[in-house]
Amino acid sequence: MTMAEPRGSETGGIPQPAGWTDALTGLEGPEFWRKLVITEVARARRYKRPMTVVILDVDGLDDILRVWGEEVAHHTLRETAQCLRRMARTSDHLTRIGPSRFGMLLTETDEIAAINVIERVRVAGPKSVPRTADMIRFVFGWASPKPGDAPEGVVRRAEDRMASDRD
Image (cartoon, rainbow, N blue to C red; front, side, top):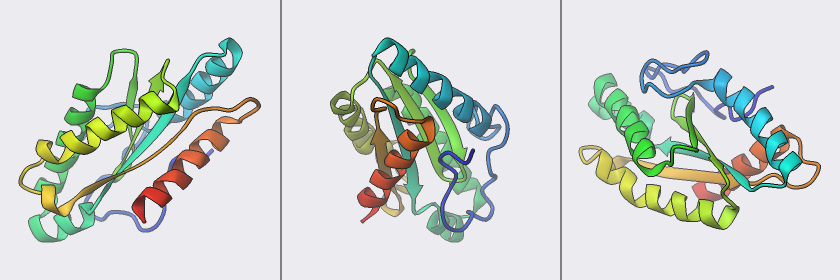
């Protein structure tokens, strides 16, 4: 399953998160994300409870790497993770799923409430990385499961929305 893997070129100098935990940010990693999405989509459908998958891409990380170097790019990712932690509830799940990509699974959250979270992160994010704030843009995609949705379909809709947010 290739849920929420980065599209396009890899970010050189930024380590790809692997396994269950990401060493750079301390967040859960892509293996945890894959298992989590499968489990939580099934739970939401079974109990008819809201949940929303949110994907965040730190657009401009390649530019930071080129201009400021690896340490500043790593700092930007760590601070992005801290921003997400500040915005999340204890019931939410945060992961790093690609070189510049994060996944958020918002339990008990419909899409309207998720948009409110997204907008708070969109405002707070650049303040978390003042040195590089003018070089990055947080790009978001989100989706909630519909009846009969497979986990991959939910993630695909979130990625499609992210592509629209990038435009």
